[in-house]
Image 1 (cartoon, helix red, strand yellow):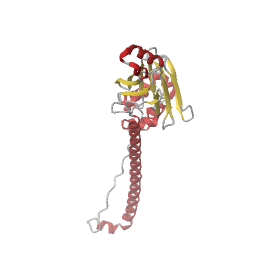
Image 2 (image 1 turned 90 degrees about the horizontal axis):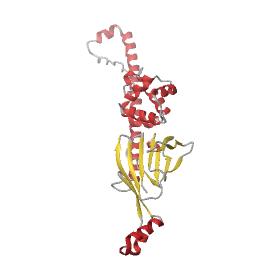
Image 3 (image 1 turned 120 degrees about the vertical axis):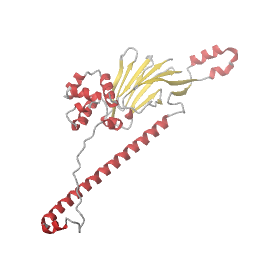
Amino acid sequence: MSELGQALKEAREQKELSLDDLQERTKIQKRYLKAIEDGDYKQLPGTFYIRAFIKSYAETVGLDFSALIQQYGSEIPTLHHDQPEIRTLPPSGAKPAQTARTSRSGSGEGRGGSVRLSSFINRALVVVIVLIILMVAYLLITGVMSNKGNNGTAGSPNSGSSVSFSGSSSSSDSSAASSDSGSTAGSSSSSSSVQQTLKKDSTQGTTSTYTLTGTQKFDVVVALKNGPKAWFEASDAKSGKVIKQGVVSTAGPKSVHINAANVQSLKLSFGAVPYTQLKINGQNFTFPSGNTVQNIVINYSK
């Protein structure tokens, strides 16, 4: 199974859709949908239909087709056009010159047609080269901007595995710490602070698990970033109960707030990570990878 097929399948399963359901919605035969998930594009009726079928599949399960093409475009076959054979006329003074003299009018017409064909091909090649240059430039610019964004949100060299937030503890925590410290801590214990930490535990496929400690609150904000729309779902990882799901978009809403203080294990699923901004207790969260589809599980311990 290809990475693109895996991403589409996970998004479909998160929507709790079977291939039969997807066939009913997209009007694409089930065997073609299965071939897309398996990356077996030879089963599709032709190269022309591949992108159209993938686009319909992605939009039906809430994924952004443009973001998928940017990430997995190398996996999708492209159309190939046969180049016409171009033959160069022999230079003047060569042996075929005698034939040219005997049929001057005929050779003139042939040369004119060859010149027009060559001119057309040259122009087409120029257009193709310009389009390739523009595409490469676009990919380079978006890559640099993405790297800058990731560098800006990193707090320290270990920010890939943990995120720390500094904040004062509640009055009850301060008094408890003061009573436990006894005479050795003195008055300094009453003004101590607790550091909130979001530590990365593991990553399996597109799912990463974190542990949030050192805080009495668990607020999550999902917002739109540099894109038309982004799908998300928040659920209790233990019971499977959906807390909130939807789409943030330019048409609104652009952000959604989730109070997860009563949830011990929160699962966040995203369908368009490049267009998604996530904040935990007011602090920006850095996604562990650039995959379009990702799942974030946060185990909360007060």
